Image (cartoon, each protein chain N blue to C red):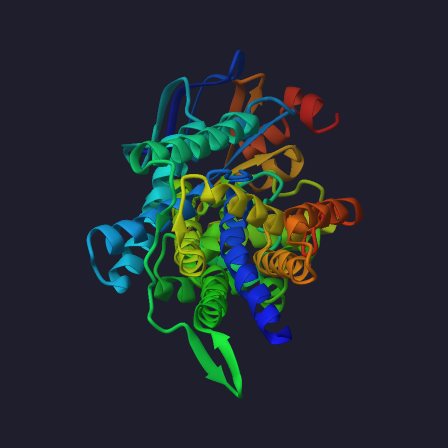
Amino acid sequence: MSALLSVRDLHVSYGAIKAVRGISFDINEGEIVTLIGANGAGKSTTLNTVAGLIRPESGTVEFDGASVVGVPAHKVVGRGMALCPEGRRVFTQMSVAENLEMGGYTRSDAENRETLEKVYAHFPRLKERRGQVAGTLSGGEQQMLAMGRALMSRPRLLMLDEPSMGLAPILVQEIFDIVKQLNEAGTTILLVEQNANMALSVADRAYVLEIGTIKKSGTGAELLVDDDVRKAYLGG
Amino acid sequence: MFFTQVLNGLQLGSIYALVALGYTMVYGIILLLNFAHGDIIMVGAYVSWLVMAQLGLPPVLAIILSVAACTLMGVLIDKVAYAPLRNAPRLSILITAIGVSYFLENGAQLVFGADAKVVPAYTELTTVQLGGLSLSFPSILTVLVTAVATVALTVVVQKTKLGKAMRAVSEDMGAARLMGINVNTTISFTFAVGSALAGIGAVLYAMAYTQATPTMGMMLGTKAFVAAVLGGIGSIPGAVVGGLLVGFAEVFVTAIGLSVWKDAVVFLLLIIVLVVRPTGIFGRTMSEKV
């Protein structure tokens, strides 16, 4: 079986600074795969490159068998990938419903009406607050909105960048439960997290990034008990 | 007498408002003070003159072609001059805008000469009787057209897919891209709408002042810019309120016999607002919940 997303020898630089130095990984349909690592390891850069926001220096990114390198971000969405960016970045001056509508920008109105029901089923709180301006939502609600918004494009691959950032532990649990639900409903997930413990416990497979390279890979369960990983990322 | 002055204020204010809307929309989406925006008015006025005085075609055609030319000019300026600088420092694009303004003014002087061209009347109708009052038809038309244009613009921005995309791009360009919004198309659309409003402003201005000169857009553009800042740049209702305020201030100062001071008063108004409320009347203080 060929992978849904296949990244080979990816190099990305910001001017003179090399952020990603030749990483390769695969994601198969139906999996939850996580990239873990410290700040500055190149996790977000990798996601942003796959999503088309940054052009790589070299290397290949193939989604569903076709290259997406050089495809502008607004067209990548139509290929079936959605990125829920770090820091949520909801449109704070627009209503919850309008934010979701923007998420379905590439889809028809009829499709959006259908997807909206599914998104509201996953996030009942968003339905209650659909008329509210997004900037007035709590951090957890904004994260749910950002995820719901990404789902509106009906992605086959959903990329989540630090969904637990800045959230209270109970909300982190809630968000990860939803990630699992989404996966069970058929969405493949690429998850970037600093909360390695949480990420590894939901992931089928994981890659450990260190200064732009992949240091280790394995199943989530394997890495959870790996000594090096425990020392570096799991606090002992 | 009083009503006539109020109507004059409304008329002038409406024209400023239409031009200020273009300033505010472009600023809202790419944070650019488009100093060439006033000169678009000049382009519109010359097109009206060309169509009516030179080609002898009917006013309806002059109106359509003027608005179309302004729209096209606005989009073209963005594509040629600003789009290549999208990732450049903001100062570079600002200086480019000033350059485009000079280019248009001097270009017009080269093509049409420095002397004023007389734009023929668009309509035979000069006054209408309303409840015993004799009111200027161009004034009433200007106010009505501006009201309709403002409502239409508000509906477009609030309700249509492209309008919502505009708001999304103006808030977070990167996030908008991730939604599948083509940012360049959205920016072009913003320039088109802003410039079309300027085109309408050009026709209404030429209807009132019947002249086209190469530098006519300079003072008009500056006043409209003041109006946009006064109302709170980036805000659509702000541009309208700012435009009306500037128009009324000018007419009032002229009416009390101090017409030499009418420009100074506008800028004094700007200074007062900037001191008391730097974000303008409808301006938002940017604060976001993290």
